[in-house]
Length: 222
Image (tube, rainbow, N blue to C red; front, side, top):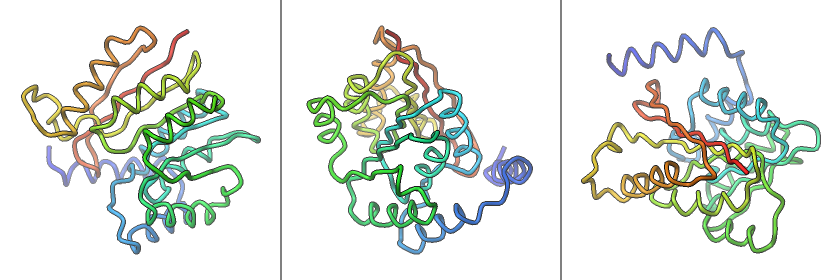
């Protein structure tokens, strides 16, 4: 299989199962115009996040890594009336683009973008006793996924769904001798997923317009 074939299949699936969406198209255009890297999820993956949030019945969603807000919007659209999404972003330029995109999508009233280093923000949430989240989406720097997971668990409750994006890294995750900081971080992340008794986890590799990657998915137990 080639990247061209993967692209064609994603385009087929998207064209058959997702309705045209001028708002999300404008979000991608605005992000590209601002120079943001095209590392948001693919449209069919965004719909998967949306459906997972609905299946969970999530009323409170935490996102670690906002970028231009594309993934944020997919998740926020799944929230019921009175729901809230908090997204953490370290880069002020990204946050500015994301806020404009969220406003464009008519979601400013339910989405809050919090600036700062994610680990520090999460730790503050824990100290402040922030209400637990129903779904947590990790999509930031992979080397810090272990810290994000540990802190996320303190912001969870039984039944919380934790999804970690980009955990396959083009297959590099299988190299146990890798010194790449992101791969090293993901090795520890997978160790935590496997050994923490609070977590029931799996991971799936994917191919498509975003290349070869994948995600982890965990349910927090009592």
